[in-house]
Image (cartoon, rainbow, N blue to C red; front, top):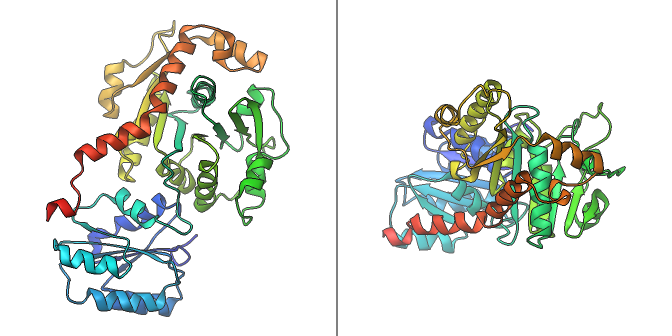
Length: 396
């Protein structure tokens, strides 16, 4: 998708605001955002001249006030019905706020802004990501290949489904090397490949039922393809719509993401309520963890959403990096440790079961601790945010 094709349009006052375009687009599930410097009148002419398919408008207005009503009216002439619009600027006037809201603007933010708040305001309707308060999206990703995110994703999902009686689905998005279904001795001709084979098909409950494999009560799996030669062209909006649809049926949507960096992975992470970064205490893993955490911060992901889990902790071989060094390099504290219990991992894979199903072990207990934290994570984050947030109206 190039900038001309994206439905995300950012109208700015100067070049320093360019970063908002792509960050906002990623949060809404698109690869890129269209960026334009000027006012609403000029932007409307630009949309018309280039026939841009605009569905989401974020306009930074600075201290402009008197001309905004005219600008909004002109923009409305060039946008399809249902286009979402959010404004941000230096104006702090309740009368102005009420006037633009009455005109159909989704929200107004006083500067400085939180771009995630803008994305949520724009996602009020239409094809935008769901903000389902009853469903939690959790992304699991390894810092380096082989660090164990699939093990964490599958086993925490089982704990959420079994111990917390929550409808849970694991989506194996490692489309070339995903092993979640295989480790459970499950097979399906469909899985995530069904989605990638038909990217233009609407994602609904019928398609989801075709893709999922039931493992146990409350736990479903969407398997990765079996074909190593499979090279899908994955669009961010396809992943966005899949997550949105799954949220309607599941209390927990667990995404097992591959160790790559791409627009669709960025979009999946930005739609997640919590991110579990799985790493090990060795140099390669620490280096990659630091790079991932840095790019996540740059793309607007709240560091409080990220939970760092050290896998294979306490291995018999001497670990190359200390926890203190890991936290210093990554600027992030370690939240959980999983012991180096290779025997339990291998036994579970050989039996086609999850680790908690094998019985009591330190590893099973620590996995349950992660699941317990994830169960309340979204509610805790919302409460923390409400305690700290000063709303626009309270500042007036």
